[in-house]
Length: 164
View 1 (cartoon, rainbow, N blue to C red):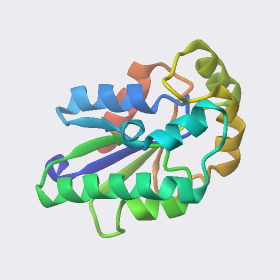
View 2: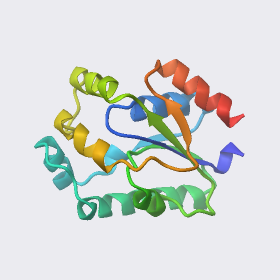
View 3: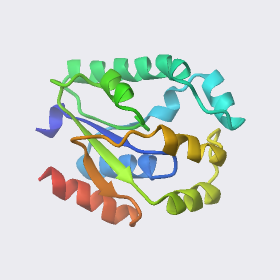
């Protein structure tokens, strides 16, 4: 089952997407990629300056992620992708309903996320954008929702156990 599966680890900045995706990839033996790697330079600069991205800004980024996912599905290769996927419309671009994809939503308390953002260094993600991300977030229906206030090991263990 997992050999053709796409896992999208989603949530706002600071919820632990990258760390969880990387650890889950190691646990399951599946390649992990981070959607942050696919942002065009103009998007990175806007975020570095604390300017929230618009839907129009995100469109080419989402399309490049869609191409990545489609290529993996075509090749029958699983993928774990760390991606904010904040809106339902973004998630619909990433995968078609008939495709084998599981969204894992990392839900964490805003104060936990703010503390994590304050404690980390990121190439371009400005902590001032947290409120914008929280406002943009449309919690997903049908996703595996995981309490990300806990340790990395606890979060990964819950995901693995949920996959059965």
